Image (cartoon, rainbow, N blue to C red; front, side, top):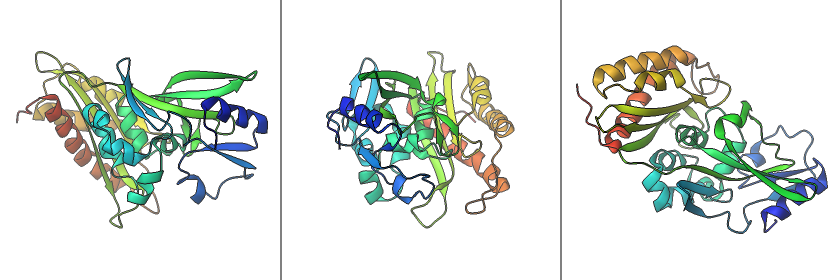
Length: 290
């Protein structure tokens, strides 16, 4: 249980691939796919300062030790990243949210991970740290670069630590939202999750949009064609109907034997999109015309 980031990456380097960094461990300890099992787990949740959430240089920064419950309760995240608050508030149950971390949610690289989808819509970045010649090296990387496939992260958890994540602070006339559907037993993986961030121009048109959803691809998915369609358009019902058609044309959900069919997920996507973009536009100050 290292107390500094330098100590954590040096421990990982010393074990030369035989150790693994973990946060809350709520994903790790139920995953049976560890082959071979690591000799050592390096728990990063006690690293000094990285259980904090703070604002710095126009960004909201969340340390790797911050739990989902901390994010939900954070006034600064509530003010600047509503979509992330809504996503983290639906993960697991209270016991899981009190322990599990957003950094761990991202590092697990599941295409339907709620925290990853919300942070992707917020144009999130991750601070990756590692040891090189005994020295601590750190670099911010766009969240889009961290996912390689279902459960396959570009972060090597045997040698690297996802030290923090960040997203740009909310601007004027900007809003975000997250919507999700899952099976009714309460603590379950999502059938579909969708997050939206929109910014209005002074003339009331949609100046920018970010849309993320999953599972519709091997990784958390950015709907870039739909984002492009929405820019410079009025936030009216016709625009949103056409945007929904664009969104359906660029997403390809699959059938899951445990959760939902592809056909059901395609029915769900428009409903979630309408809910999330409606809330995001309202929070940005728009009134959607019929």
